[in-house]
Amino acid sequence: MKKIIKNGTIVTATDIYTADVLIEDEKVQSIGQNISDIYAEVIDASGYYVMPGGIDPHTHMDMPFGGTVTTDDFETGSIAAAHGGTTTFIDFCLTEKGKSLKSALEKWHAKSADKAVIDYGFHLQIVEANEDVLREMPRVIEEEGVTSFKVFMAYKDVLQADDETLFQTLVTAREHGGLVMVHAENGDVINYLTNKALEEGNTDPIYHALTRPPELEGEATGRAAKLTALADSQLYVVHVTCQEAVEQIAEARNKGFRVYGETCPQYLVLDQTYLERPGFEGAKFVWSPPLRHSSNQEILWNALKSGQLQTIGSDHCSFNFKGQKELGKDDFSKIPNGGPFVEDRFSVLFSEGVKKGRISLNKFIDLTSTQAAKLFGLFPQKGTIAPGSDADIVLFDPNAERTISVDTHHMNVDYSALEGMRIIGEPVTVLSRGDYVIKDKQFVGKPGNGKYLKCNKFNHNSLQENEKEDDLVH
Ligand SMILES: [Zn+2]
Image (tube, rainbow, N blue to C red; front, side):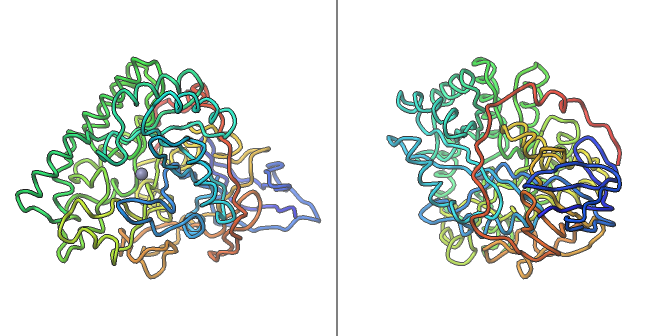
């Protein structure tokens, strides 16, 4: 059925204006003044922003880690994402040494088919760039629509790849239009520091942060950026947390290299002291890279504003406190790494960013939606409101005030890392390809309605327009 969104303020990465939006056959058909159609349902958006749905480029649904599995699967995780204004997510498909990329993708398709309520794509991990894998990468890009490849520089003996693998992945990605993503921390040195801390009897959650100092993130980020320059390839650094890493990305970008960076809400609003909370509560805040000293927060905001970092991912990776985080009660290195953020990514950035005057409203859309669509080959199908784009639209109340809490969130996890945080702004109604997923804050979607998205090849030209500095003051 056709829909017309009336009386709202349309916000994209470049514009803010009042107009009506006509939706038909899953797409935005037209945008204009006083659109009328007797066959269309009229949605009154008075007082609301009409925004492109958020794109979360970084989630871990139904993922095994450290002998356990993340609590949110593609159904619960995507429902929570939709409540939070996100209409597309890109999940990390893990691979195994010695097995084909195709077999890993089949596993991830089996986890997600018939479950997701919004559209989704995959990034593919490269753990070992052997001949078979390097031969399979171009085929995965061309046929499977997976164009981004993740290399872990940390988690020694588990997920970590060596520099040869990173470099070969970069070279292959350049040749075939892929984008290489890195978890940038020096896993070898972290391994040494972790063992040393445990030998000395230091087992509390805070040692998770103390054994992964920011210097090791800066070092790995710089190493990856330099290898990218040498390979004349393209790099996306996930979850950037600190000055040391931002400086490396800025330096590479200033030299003209195709290096991009993401940060996450948790690094913008929480800090390392949370890991010191008594009664093992610090474990709720254990993920990698760890939370940093609060002085890094303004540095990250400035990097977002100036365009040195381009996107906001949630790094959603939910583990219950009871029974899962507790696995590390006597040994911080056994605490499953990850936190629940898929639902709050969009609103926290609006409240802390736009409402507090740190970023403009256009920049907010760019960071939470448009840039991810461009980097991962989904633009302009996703990431904007324009004729021909998918009707993935959020009606957002910019004045609603609320408190984040485990009692009201929709993620399948027994705590909120943002418990008690007061925020302004709330998604009210969310459409995925023109269908209601959230209507007046209630979930009305259906598992399986979310479609798997084939991503297009990396295209540097699509990004250049947005690389200008953003000096708009909201
Ligand atoms: Zn992650």
